[in-house]
Amino acid sequence: MPELPEVEVVRRGLEAHVVGRRLTEVQVLHPRPVRRHLGGADDFSGLLRDRLVLAARRRGKYLWLPLDSGDALLGHLGMSGQLLVQPSQAPDERHLRVRLGLSGAAPPGPPPGEQPLELRFVDQRMFGGLAVSRDGADVPPEIAHIARDPLDPLFDDDLFVAAVRRRSSELKRILLDQGVVSGIGNIYADEALWRARLNGSRPGTRLRRDDVRRVLDEVRAVMLAALAEGGTSFDALYVNVNGESGYFDRSLHAYGQEGRPCERCGAPITRVSFMNRSSFYCPRCQPVPRVRRASATGSGTTPV
DNA sequence: CAGTCGCCCTGCTGGC
DNA sequence: TGCCAGCAGGGCGACT
View 1 (cartoon, chains in turn yellow, purple, brown):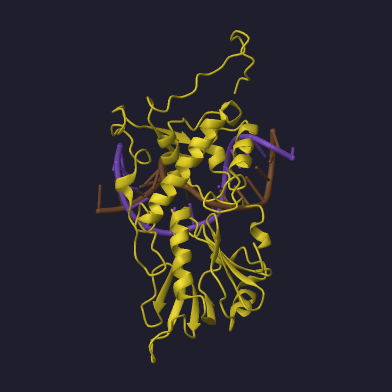
View 2: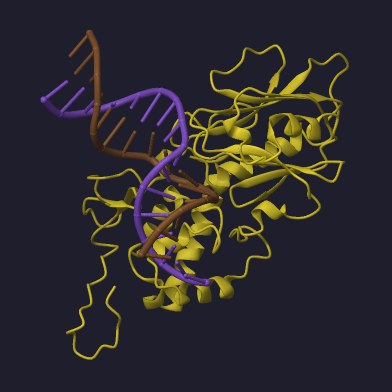
């Protein structure tokens, strides 16, 4: 379940091993991961063949590789996607979906006679996918609706605070809304909320500015900590571009910790169902907001 | 039109 | 032992 830090680790791997190389033959082994490419698998392959990879970019959980054609290879890892750089003779992974041959030298250059390499998209559950965007000059239009992420230098904190406080949705739902802030998934949302001592069910409109700033600070802190450890993952499905698995679960304070004592106060971490998934929080440090009723004495608050 | 819901996928786990 | 429900969950189409 890669979130921003894991995707950033993959981006760095692509930058080191794929940028500066040329794509050769492209083989689509399963149609689903290219479903977003409306021209179909053959069109996808044709647009990539013989193209030079110029850069590796990321916004939130999306990655893209601008090409010398002006197009870009756009990708999302979904839940279980991996991008691996492998020697061509390495056996196929069980869930190999797309194979992209690589040629040419990546700076600073390989030794002569190096083995041919492949970029492989491996994805068990196929929530992720690849597509060719016809406009790789800036942010691909397909992801124009994705907001900047908290590690983007141009992310506007004040704008984010205002956007959250305008919304009546629950805070966690807002954190997961990639149109408001990108890169946050279920794990980092729960961790940031725990660190900020805020319950994710609090409506955005009822939060103080300092609360929103605090949770944003904690989102950044937890992401930077994960990045410092080379990316986080909590199951073996996530592997970085070199095929190296990242693990970081010792650092989890809330996510997946149901029944374990809160590290701050000792109260057992609670799990609740939320948006057809799970939320974990400390019932003492992150108290559930009191339910406001219309009969409450003139508080002027809106019932949820 | 903002907000919410359900579906897409596969594989693992737990209960009977 | 075998079967099946439940669970994991990002993103988007569809609906209110």
